[in-house]
Image (cartoon, rainbow, N blue to C red):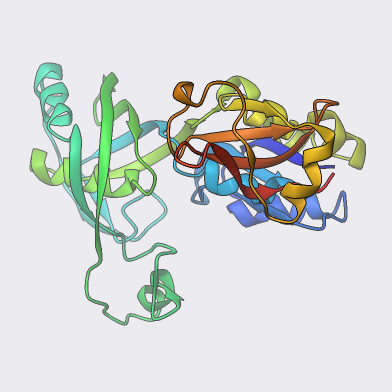
Length: 294
């Protein structure tokens, strides 16, 4: 049982709560998710099981798309609706064109201040543990990229938008920054992740549908399908032993058709995935990056 479960997470549960629930259904040797979703967030949470955990590095940097709702006129200590209210003001209704223009200014590379209530670690401890104890920590910043940001609807004081962004983007921080720019303050009211790289909303299965071990088997996506976007290389049976010993194998086809460093999924003659390799056009070989035990 190797592959991925694309979970549609419900609000009120942490990402690790999803793992705990799945572990009760099957004794996985390895299990892990890509991209933490906050407790009040919903949507796509890709979960790798067994040998699937090995391919997480090839999937975790994909673009993410969210549908978010901002509440104007309110700020909180956690930057979302679950936190302690810090400020609350009456706000006038804004012109939709103004709001869309303000949002568009966030498009591109931006520097965000990491929320105090986050799992980002400082001195091997997550920031939220310091925040809960009232311990001040020097603000942490990171560069992220907003590829697209669109206003979907506006029913004052709620603002609905869709954001496509890079790994590590805090939509909570985006809400806070937008509110500050607008001058009235804002907090994240709700959030749903609708895409995570190659994982899309139509692939997701609600966590409540997992009742028994058979459900895990029914909804499991194979590694071949998950990495369907990669070029595939069928490995001759006689060459499989070289990969298992960490040795390179000849580059398939015309080396000029490959890019140096290109990632490829390696299949055996039966079509099962046995590894992930990387092309080396200088030596005209494929070097193993991850070996999959089947």
